[in-house]
Length: 425
Ligand code: GLV
Ligand code: MN
Ligand code: MN
Image (cartoon, rainbow, N blue to C red; front, side):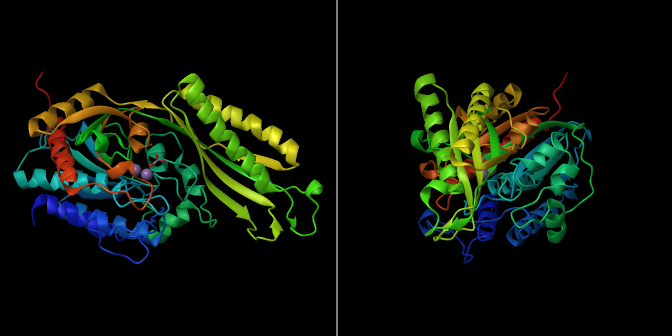
């Protein structure tokens, strides 16, 4: 099997994991707009894809270790030093009903790049290490970029391990159930570089027909988890005047965020986005006045002050809404992920590497969040984007053409080779 076909095979094979009615999807036309992949951390599908990745890592000769929060590391020692490690990878968890490339491409692409390096007989002077971050999406444990937040010291391991999913299962239990509760203590002291290949998840590269994006900045992301408590009651007998309808209160919050984010963009020229993507309504019966609503709010911008101000205005609006509807609103604020600037050195290395392998590039920003933004706070970090058909991601119609994946891989392979050399003094 040639190299790209092996990566293609890995992505097609793992693209079945977490898909209702597992199916090998080899072409865009085979996608079902209703049925994507669902692999939150701790699910059976998440275990399967982790096991598959660990097998692949072992197959290419990597030494595999698992840390306390289930981050996976697969290491190939350097020929000249065991310091200055070049890390490369992404995540294997997914959103609910998402696409088969988000995260998986960066993990299997990294393994494939090393498989190719081995095959070519290239000697990496620095160590190369594939990394799989736990719970990047926040689809189970209420904080995005969780594994990298622990690795970079932003979140304590005990705090992460005690977080609960919607079923009340802690991360610790969930990792134990799938066999990924390790004890490796990975410090970043010996890590020099981090590289992540990812699908763009936006329309720019596809529209401009450019095969590779080199990321310069990544938007920040702030989450607010709100619980609205009203009074559950009979839909037929409870007069409108005396209701404490938690869902009506929630609908005002949703409208506020959307209107205010739009206003900021139009009037202030910001790049703010605000979304309420998650709503749990209790008890969720047509003839019951909703007594409780849980909502997940996502606020992003490349300017931290803009995120901060939409977040604070939302909290203030909630106070007014509490009064108007006689409900109680409590909020949880997981740590905010700041906008990140990626390393000029790595950006330039990606640029030069793409030129070496003859692939056209453009520089761009990322609206999506990535573990790389946590890593960028202390490690020289870069990201390689490949086009997403019609800019779709976080949905079943996410797709990237195999030629584009081959281009991304060629560039990644060259980047790893270039970064793994120790520069002559
Ligand atoms: C992760 O994919 C995010 O941008 O939320
Ligand atoms: Mn994602
Ligand atoms: Mn991702």
